[in-house]
Picture (cartoon, each protein chain N blue to C red):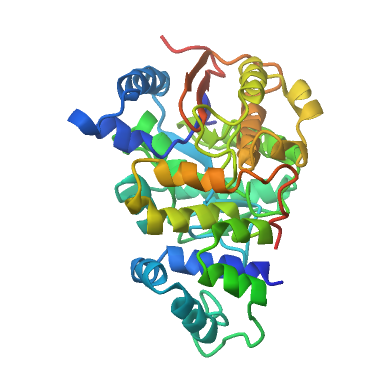
Length: 287
Length: 119
């Protein structure tokens, strides 16, 4: 059976690529600290020596649209083109080509359907920054095959938070029952408090530092019970109008497991949002 | 109200560099042309299989024609789509992050609950 060697959750700030590669006067004052933190975070994946990456993210109205919106979708393709014109325009993100792990995609689809998730799938999925940003930060070589898992976190009606947790648990079970000897890492990106296109956007900090503090605590401690007792679809509007992306963090808590403390926790207080980085080693920390 | 069509306009313009520039330069003309020629084009469908019934409410058409992102927020346009497209059109006229902060200031009179964005 495959081995789940790392579970990793982070934010996916699209400005990192440009900030980390900028030189001279164009380099923002926070770039060096950001790079140091990302480099340390990257080591947590490198040490796990994965063969395959299951990548959880959310399409930002690039390929998935309101005429036919899935709630949970798995990519099943041999390759994935990545990043879009408006991401190149706005964030300077490069065009990328990532290899797919089609047999694991097929397995997650078949077994996921049988486990009670009516998963959508795509044979031609162009992925966006919710998945390419963690490639850029965690595996810039972009040399590992991926299985993209997209969730709907911003086209209402949305699935309930508990559904994200349940899907995370199911992904964990299916990865660990996948026939073969591959080493699999599950990587997901979400948001802490975040406001986009609203009055609280682009402040000096995330729109709700108190929510961020509590959220980091829930994730770091694997406190799913505490998190689910307080987080609802309605309550997530309060910390910022784009905070429903926090449910992707909840999905990753489902992958990591109830009450399982993260082996690695770090944060970076940036303008606009709080960056947060978590790693769990389900089979113990690698040497 | 046709919140879906409002979002469809923002979505289809944002992904086309020529349309982004056209909408910046001639907002009313672009909205008029788009509603006549593109509103009923079913995305990802063979062209003749268009829909027949989509049209803007007057308030939506005026908000788009006026580049009035405050009104678009009030009407329940998806804030991510509105922000992304308006950054593409107007960020170039401001210092870094200046447009985004001005955008927030112009929306400062809104408080929770924000307008519903469900389509």
